[in-house]
Amino acid sequence: MINTLRAALLVPDIRQRIGFVFGAFAVFVFMVHIQLPNVNEQAWQQQLQSGTFFNFLGFLSGGALQKLSIIAMGITPYINASIIMQLMTVVLPQLEEMAKKGGEEGRKKISQYTRWLTIILATVQSFFMTRFMSQAGVFYDHSLAFQLFAVLMFVAGTMFLMWLGEQITDRGIGNGISLIIFIGIVLRFPTQIANTVSSAAGGGINIFNLVMFILIALVTIVSIIFLYQGQRRVPVQQARRVVGRKMFAGRSTYIPLRLNNAGVISIIFAISLLLLPQQALSWFGRGTQSGFAGNISAFLTAYFSPNEWLYNVVYFLLVVVFTFFYSAIVVNTRDIADNLKKSGSFIPGIRPGQPTVEYINRILLRITTAAAIYLGLLAVLPTTLERGLGVTTFYLGSTSLLIVVGVALDTMTQIEARLAMRDYRGFMKR
Image 1 (spheres, rainbow, N blue to C red):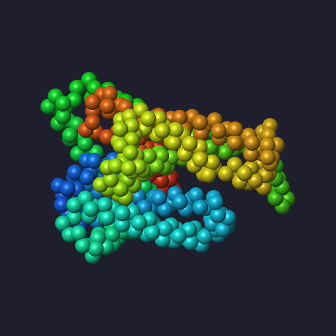
Image 2: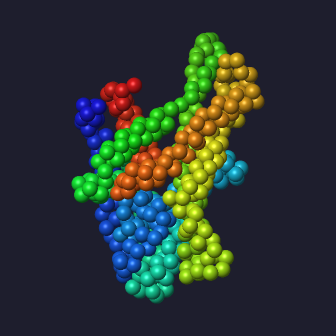
Image 3: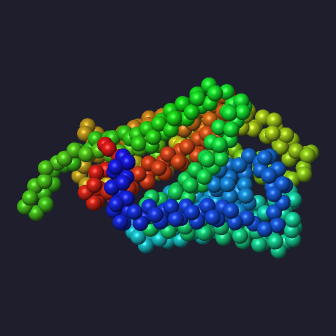
């Protein structure tokens, strides 16, 4: 693998693309340390320690939220906008027509709509964040002018990251937005590893528990790789065709149905929905200790924290539901059946048309059930694992693991494809 990577670096085009990606990473790290002015860091750290929602946003930003950088919101608004546009493409026939038959022009229009929606979502999110921070004493300057300035900076930071991601996609290797999220997560690993080693050396963590934690983490990573690479291959037989005076014999192929069609989206949906009520109360009902809002806040604090069984049960069920929901959106079995029929192909033993749709749906139901249960367990087990082994200095989050492993595999696949075009052996041996 090392020799193949060395050979890849000898190719000028690939070397330049890899260099551009690392250059973009350096720009991202530089932006993390550009802090918003007039920040009361002590008050902000107190808010971070008491807010689970901010910690969720912070792990995607590479520490930018903890430092209250101008890119503190990270790329989250763009992710939300992309998810909403995917859902709207299924709901609105106009967008669906544009995505399927509009070609390159249609895709450009949908990308433009996603950018505009990103601006709207980033503005709304930054407005409420800024209002909350001002009321909590995070800013020394409480004037309306400074709050508007902070909103503008946060939105500009998100738009810059979106632009940087598009540049990585065009001039680097891999998906730029995914790589920005990847580096945002990886940047926190050195600090967490150093804290874990320091705690273990000082006797704060049992060595046996630490070894068990590492082994379980490795097993989890391997299982995630199998989840991403796993697929159910549905056999397809292509009928004989006559083109001009030539007859082409039928050949056998397959339809690759991925085991995990939802990716990390279902977990992001679930955790966002769980944390939203508590964060909304802190934004809109700050200082309310009595009445209906106070009762809800007390209930959420007592029974709906990440360490409570009710939270984890609801979390598991939401991940399962969203996995089925998103898989149904991503995989359109009707389109698959129609495309097979148009090309003269068929699944052996299954009639074309509706029987093919029902057959693929049955297969999709089975593999999605397995993926949904796995993702649900992956979502709730890290918290239980950390609490049981006492290793709290390293956050083994399901979302972060899925993103890091998925982006790494996707980038490796793209490097392999570029190597294959230049008559090199594949980056990953098959």
